[in-house]
Length: 338
Image 1 (spheres, rainbow, N blue to C red):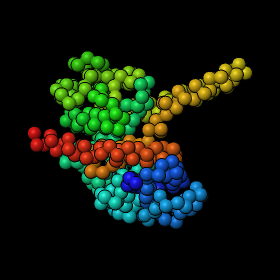
Image 2 (image 1 turned 180 degrees about the vertical axis):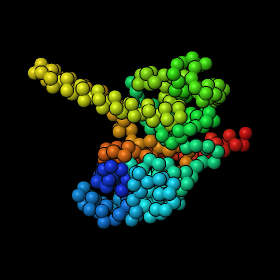
Image 3 (image 1 turned 45 degrees about the vertical axis):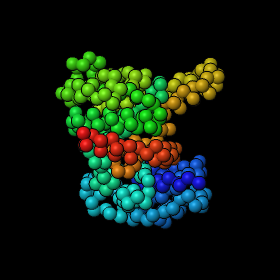
Image 4 (image 1 turned 135 degrees about the horizontal axis):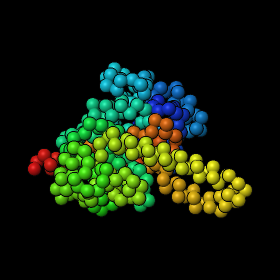
């Protein structure tokens, strides 16, 4: 029998903690028997939530952590001072190989800082990026970076492209994934200083299937598999994506309920429409992995519900099964030797 993948879930992080993280952990272990979840946080609180979920099985254990890092706390100070927080305790389990992955809906800053200071970067990786899947007409695409490195350099973006390509090839099975650089036009001479400096470097990478610049309006059509940008641009793309998606769904529902005729039509198109809208629901892909660390750290939305937590846990299983961390270590070890 294959060994279970050990995933730590921060039970105290996020707007809906502890109920939704605990519920998501329960849903994950009920859906698969190859997962063992370790919930970090205040033991009595977690036990109460597990009881509310009706769970008493053996695939979930609790590691007590008394402290909680709040969203508004300075990340570096919080990680250094709150050694008994659910984030720090969970990441130390990954660092000491007592767990394979860590999932949190808590403070993004604390997760990013903890990932680098506690779990540690793969040797040769300059800046680990956050890389969520976003839905497109042709399937999910990987957005690298969406929030970790606002002031990135061209060398960072080249590494983002390489790590993103490895992820898409081994997790989704896409051979030679198409890599696009976010720009204000497709012409090579366009863009700000960072884009202009990065473009020729990506063009020279024989190990990348670089297709050139891509405009934001073409991303939903699935023009590329790996979308490369610095974190400011990536975060704007991600937030706009989410806002437009939520608004469209709201407007479609309102339009269908506007009259008796539209209500009758809604009944006929509901199954097909539901399936289409589901494809553009980002929560089905889980969270954003922090690529380039010595272990897997996944950040979900602060407002994540149980479905997103569950999918993030399952996402960790795929990451572990495909040995992504080991592949990235080999990739950057070869670069240093050359």
